[in-house]
Length: 122
Image (tube, rainbow, N blue to C red):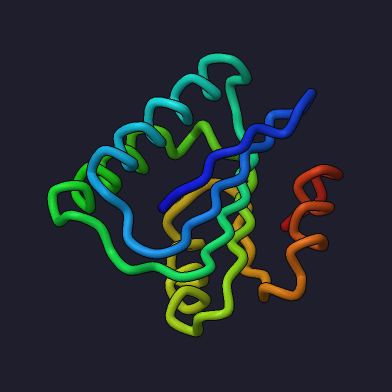
């Protein structure tokens, strides 16, 4: 399941992932993010990963293509989770993207939000 939320009067979007993601959910999310990019140009994104139960293999490839296509459209990313593998993945991904990316533990979600609101380096 994915929840998508735009923060009023900002270019911040929040995603909450909890469990598996269906192909339809992924496609709907991409459409919402693309609409937000058209509206704001560049986005700041908070990804709150409570749990991740996977998604269809074809959508993994679509996710990679989407990421490369839109890399320049994200200035800041805050990843919030408590899974060590997500922290390691986030740290590794930082070297491949132009956005400022930072990992936060679940208990620090408000700090992650504040970093995005204030446009401080995450």
